[in-house]
Length: 438
Ligand SMILES: Nc1ncnc2c1ncn2[C@@H]1O[C@H](COP(=O)(O)OP(=O)(O)O)[C@@H](O)[C@H]1O
Ligand SMILES: [Mg+2]
Picture 1: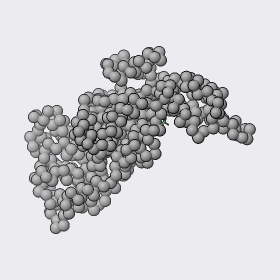
Picture 2: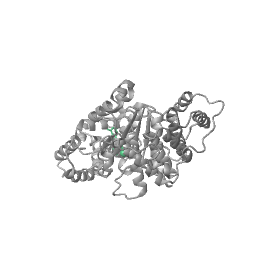
Picture 3: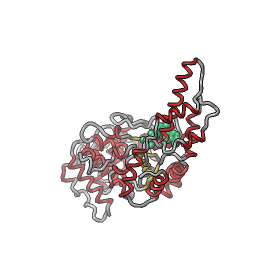
Picture 4: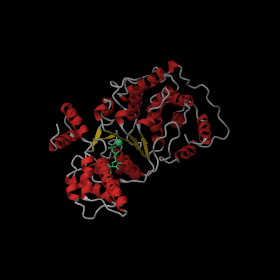
């Protein structure tokens, strides 16, 4: 983690200056616990989280950090205890556990131990908080996770061809509120929960997310399965906790979970402790979102049928956007985009190319244009002068690169046979019917 040591020191002394039982010190301690967790110091993190919980036992953020920290220290039983309290609180509250009882205190939580003596020159907590918050959200997390929040701004939604509906929904549900604090405030509750992009591979889901990152500049944290799954015990769920802790700290912003099926796969299917712990941590984080805390969660998957059902329940990834292969106008736009800067014969028959590429994903179209121009390049080298790609090059390329979406579409047809109704499902059914896929 890139947080300066002096920030820790300043926050530590500010925390030491607040009585452990004073609820006013809770946000500071939770913040500090999150920082320590990110810095790979779970013991210290746990210490602050449990002190915060002693003063405010129902603080869900403190509980989620405590669970991750406990897990990271290898105390899975303690972590389970915190998760249980967290879940109990969110599922109704009245049955919530009694203050410091609730199964955590007895398990050897270091509540109140090793607390610092107040120091003479504390510096106000508020100033220190601002210091820590100054880091832009785009700043990459340090090892071991290394979230890909690099080069935002290289592509924007303008680079995404077609997909007007998808863009509109993203504007409405994400970009608009993100860019307008008043909207965020007013509609926060309504925007609670995550949005999941799904569809065949190569249709631009990851590309769209990168474009959103570009639109938002800083404020976009992206994690792939490789970022999440760590090799040592407890690291994976800790990575999830760190990701969300960072997002909350640096809100407003978007957390993007790519290939959600691999991150949050069905616990029943991948019956490993690690996979289960990751899904549990993810559920914890999603349920802990207040809605108007300015953190939006976006995910993408090619395999929605492999995503754990619990992740799809209300308040979690309950909003979905289907991203299908581009329709004719979108294919035309995408092809034109790909033609830019490439040697393409001016009399190319674009209309027939558009007709001949039904079912092609965006990625397929990119490959097609590359393949046709490669042919032209080979020819150019043979004749020693630039010979742009012609219709014949494209016809040859078409024969070599069939659309890659077919397998996905037939899997989806099977899935649909068991799926209920819904906007996305109806849209997909209509698409399959139109293309006679069953
Ligand atoms: N609508 C689109 N506009 C521009 N490029 C696209 C579009 N859809 C796909 N692509 C291209 O295809 C590539 C692969 O898309 P990707 O986002 O990885 O697909 P997915 O995540 O849905 O599997 C992208 O890097 C981009 O070059
Ligand atoms: Mg992808």
